[in-house]
Every structure is written in structure tokens, then in C-alpha cells.
Length: 186
Image 1: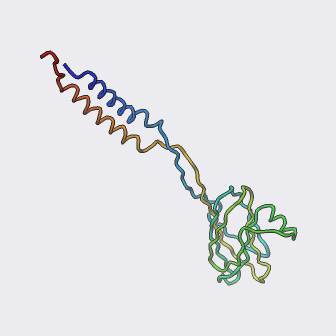
Image 2 (image 1 turned 180 degrees about the horizontal axis):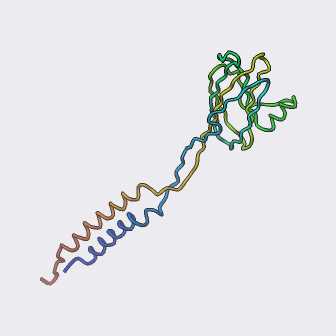
Image 3 (image 1 turned 90 degrees about the vertical axis):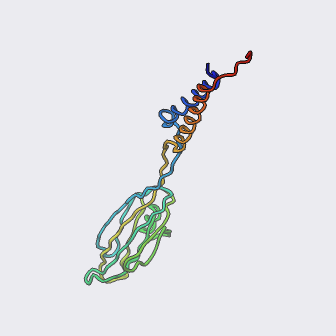
């Protein structure tokens, strides 16, 4: 004779734990956000005479960052250039000589870093204005942004619950099988 109810409860816990470990664990998921670096321009080298425009398509709501290296063309020594970043509408206004606003502006000397945030997705113009200098400039540019993507991943806590249920179920099952039920008429 065995303790039937105890044995059944132990078997149910054991089967539930094994199911969590093998089958159900893949269907119980959590949302995970992953930050990924996206290279827009890994290493561009170009010559700036008067004004040079480099358009790039960027998504909305990201932090764009990069590096800029400016050298003077004939001597290859460190030099400066005015660096501006516009969205497409403000770039068109700037070209037409109208009032415009920029996302980033600086007179960059030698090696420098820049960061700005995009408001809308679309084309952004990286403008290098060298009209204040008599010499052409070599510019090396790299541009990246960090994008956040979400995905569904299996919940890493489910195996612990499965092992716990299996262990408790096994203990209850063994107890139910080994323990002799009391005989009430004896």
C-alpha cells in the first residue's frame, strides 16, 4: 500500500517541473532591450575646398556621435574647419541664405569628437565650411549611432522553477511511495 494522494501530488509536481524544463520554458518569454552600435560612416576621407556636404540618412530619436580629423592640405599639419549638422529642411534654408538652425556647430581644430540627437528620421547634412581659409583641408570623418532594439527572449528564471518543482515533486513522490498508510481498524 502507498499514500495515493501524496503520490499523485508528487507525480504532478514532477511532471510539471519536467515540462517547464523541456517544453514550456521556450514559450515563456521576457522583453529584452539591446543597444546596438550602427556605423553610418566608418572612415571617410575627403578634401574640403570651400564647402562640402555629406548627407546621411538617420533614424529618429538616436544619439549620433563621431570623430573628425582636420589637416591642412599642403602641409598636412593640424588645421580647422567649420563643421555644421543640419536636418534636410534647415539645410535647404541655409543653402538659400535664409534663417536656419543647426543640430551641431563647431570650429573643429585637429582631432575632435561630436555628439547630437536626432528629432526626426530623414536625411541629415554634415557640412564642412572652409570659406574662411585660403588652404584646402583634408577631413577624416566617422559617424555612428546607438540604436535600441527590443526582442523576446526565453525567461532565464523558468529553469530554476522547473528544477525546484521537479525536486519537490520527486521528494513528495518518494515519500508517498515509501510511507505506509495507517490502518484505521488495527
